[in-house]
Structures are given as structure tokens and as C-alpha cells.
Length: 375
Image (tube, rainbow, N blue to C red; front, side, top):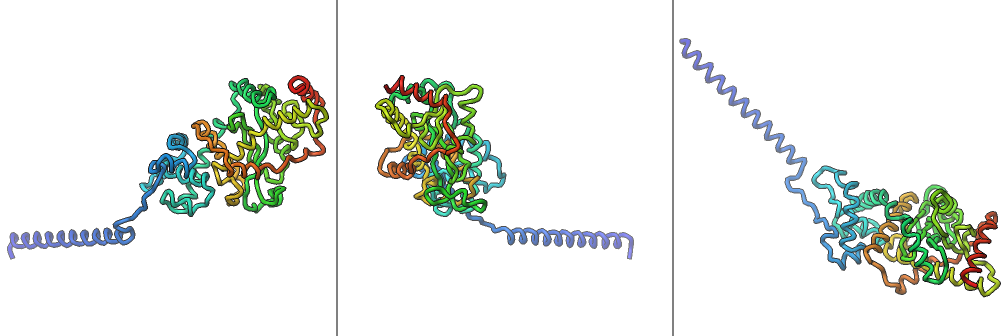
């Protein structure tokens, strides 16, 4: 066989080997594609996700207790906290997460019923509630505070109610039902016989909430909660507020906390007690509005099935959202439902702790108020 023939034979043989290698590579590639298609379905089906943007204004008010504009405000507020938590293409939009959380706060129902409004799974609702609550709690101090520039305005509005001077706010506590916690459950058993956290709230004349302390068990006395809270620094510390709070007989009289007389003996003292009661009624109305707007806080809707620490966050966030609603002009009618909630909270004042006695300066201050404004 000549050299040319041998060279031609080798060339043909090399071309055949290359074709065989290409065919083998194509078969391996086909197997990889087939494997990928086996592991991951060719067509994935996702349910339609619904946010407040798909609701009418009426539906938004009914299901979320906020207007569309107010919900948009909430979304913008938490967008930086929620956006980018997941980079996968199936991550929930901020609007869907906020809608799921607001619907939970507003209805008081738990995961499964709430999921119906957004079209997401129970687990996704649970995650949305947690993420939105944690995001909103970071902004709570901005919405729950005493504004120094409104001191005179608050005093004047409160004075116009019943002639009670220098009032900066009304203080009281409300109970929020929870399931029995694993740690120290008896501390959370309140006087009405159910487990709860005892939430201290201070409101202004407009039923807006200026301060909330939501981390104490339901069995703790109101006055002890006050002594543990930051309110003492607000009225006794540097840059203290000018004026006082009004509280019921569950509190001990302080120079900055006026309470009713337990046994009024004169007409002036009776007028003082009447003025105190009329001015203080706004706190019960605030509790009623708060629980009507956010059913998750209302005992009639069942106990919150979360640990006390998380319930504390939920309560604080609801107080914040209540203020956003009030700023938006979204008040609720004082109907029979609201009255029943007020009655639930009106369990009568606690007696102050026996070891805590009013300071002489506080007694003198109250006597001066009675003599100057109610005689």
C-alpha cells in the first residue's frame, strides 16, 4: 500500500473517531438535559397573589382597616426592611406581605383564613406576619411619642373637656389575651381568669396613642408596670414634660399623676372627681377603637397563639397603625360593638399597692387643683 493510500486511510479513520466523539458528547448532553427536566418540572404553576392594590377602597377599609393610601404609606415605610430578603424570582412582593400582615391584625383570624385574601400558603402568611411586624416595630418610636411642641395644645384641649388643667395624657392598662405560655404561666393569669399581657397605654385628647408599654404579664399590677416603664423619666427626668397624667384609683397619687379622691367629702372634691372622670373617659374610648380596628387584640376573637415577646411586638405595631389610621382621618363609629369592648376593659380600678403611699407634695398639688379650679 502506497504512502498516499495509508495517509488517506488514517484521515478517514480520524474523521470517524471525531464523529463518534461528537455523537457521544451529544448523547451525554441529552442525558443531562433529560435529568434536569426530570428533576424540575417543565411548567411550574403559581397561584395568583393578591395585594391591597387589587382591592377597592371599601374592601381595603373592611379587610385591612386602613385606606389604600395609608397601606401604601406602610409599604413605603417597610420597603427597605423587606425588599431584597430573597433574590429568587418567586419571592413575595412587599405589597403582598403587608396585605397578609394587615389582614391578620385586622381580622384576628389565624393563618389559614388569612391566606385566602392573598392567595399564598399558610407558611408564607406566617412569615409575612413575622417580617412585617419586625419591620414596623423599628419605626414605632416615630409614631408613638409625646411631642414637646404640642404640650400647650394638649393641655388646652383636655381643659376644654371638663376644666381639668395641665393634663398631658390619660394613662391606663388593657388586657390582651394570649395562650398560656410555657414559662411561668401563672404570672400571666389576670383577675378575669384568662392568660394575657397587661398593656400600659397613654393617649391624648384625639384618641391617639403617645406611649405603649406592652411587655408585662397579665397578673402584674398597673402601678408596678408604670414604675418599670420609661414614663417616670418623662415626668421626673431632665427635660420633663410640663403637666401631669390622669389615672384611675389603681395608681398612687404623684406630683405628675392625678388620681380621683377615694372618699370625696366636699362639693369641690365631688366636682374634681367628675371632671377627672369626664376627662379620663377618652382612654376607654381609645381601647375600644384599638380593639375594634384590630381584632387580633380583642379577647372575643380568641387568644393570640404566640409567645408573649411576639405578642408584645404585635400590640405595639397595632398601636402604631392605629395612629396612622387616625392621622388619615379613619375614625370608627361609637356603636354597640365599640361599647361592648369598652365594657370589657372597664373592670373597675385596682386598689393601689399598700406599700406605696402618695407623697405629701402630691397631696398638696391635688388640693391646690381642687381649690383653684373646682371650688
